[in-house]
Image (cartoon, rainbow, N blue to C red):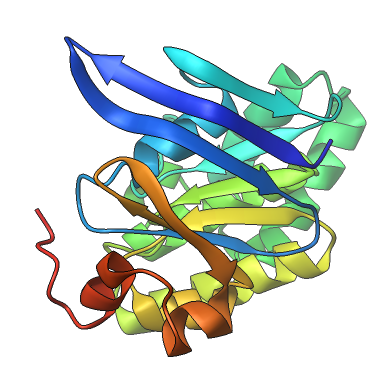
Length: 230
């Protein structure tokens, strides 16, 4: 399915440019972290890549057909059990009954929630719900997993557990593309950085280089905490 090619991708709403002429090539294997201040276009870019919305300019092109999944900051839990939430996603993907139950149960075990499979997903803690959302996405066996601020509302313990799961999903062969405001997390989970500024791509570089020697004044200001977050 990869690489993903962003060819002069733009997105306008009511005459306002929210994403502007982004050119990038995103390869398989590496973990890609999208950084930038609030309003820079990070979440919007993920939705464009995932195909939830279409660009108003340019194109998003994949090298072939394949499976994608996306997990949001606030996961949507259906009014059913944790296990049934995963089974529903697999049913929508065309997975048969017995295989659906097996993969759902295995996914919950992988994220450490096998013991609560029968509990209503909506009464789980925020961290547990995010782990169910990750299990649901992982069960689909995606080639690419988009993560939009997956730990933004979680406490440190839940954040560490979610990070462990993300690393395990990557180790299983899934490409990770994620947004985060946590610079420590970007260092831990990223191999390369796409840095957005005012809707444009200001920098695309390996994570170590981005943090040690940013190539643009905007990136340097961002790392010093001098760019406004809103």
